Length: 85
View 1: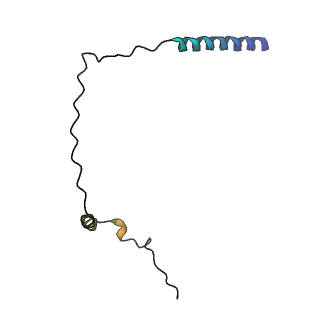
View 2 (view 1 turned 90 degrees about the horizontal axis):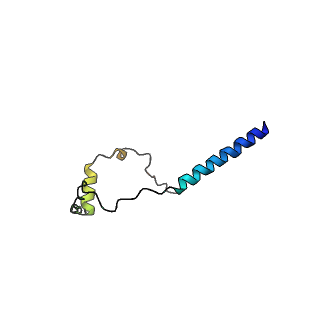
View 3 (view 1 turned 90 degrees about the vertical axis):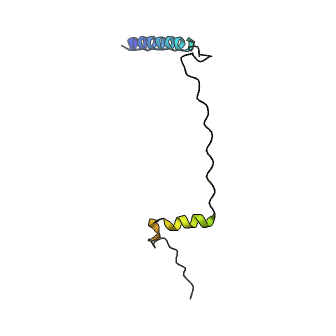
């Protein structure tokens, strides 16, 4: 039986090597150099929108005060100063 196992291993290795050589020797399909006439032309780029105006610090504070922030009610993370006696 050991001889049969050795012959099976050699045969499997030989077949595997033949498959690897066959796969590596195939050439990839040629890539199209020009677009086919069936394809529509590429769309024109859209104009970029104007960037939003920058808010001043006062405007940002007003917006923040209008919103209901859920963590405003929590006192867990408020740092309490401990003054030495």
